Length: 138
Image (cartoon, rainbow, N blue to C red; front, side, top):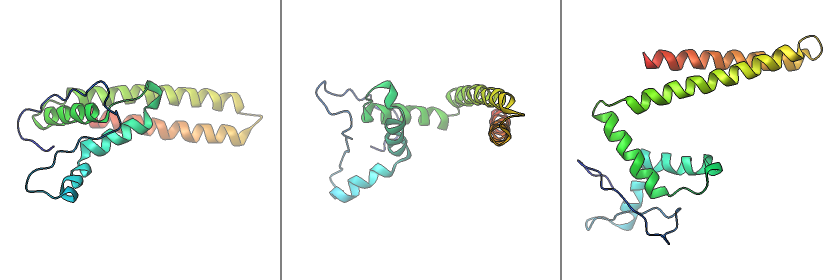
């Protein structure tokens, strides 16, 4: 699966199991050697994405790995547009979470101090995360 140059687009068969990872075994490799290719960051990230994004429906692991490989190739070539978009989107998401927690804290101050304290601590932690993300973006 490790290739230099252009990444070939993978088109799964209509009846292919979306969870079945396609592993290419070279003639010089044992099956165990070929299986070690699953340690590639794009394969590991694809597996993680499948686990945490089930709300979108079933994703195909091979398509995820191919798309992640393309994004990694672009980043290696200096095209960081996807990474910049990711950081900005995360900053907006964290900001929304911060504001939600801050409003919850305000609603609990005076009556439920422990809850207010917890919400404020979480909100301030998120605020720091937004700042760190934006520093990375600069």
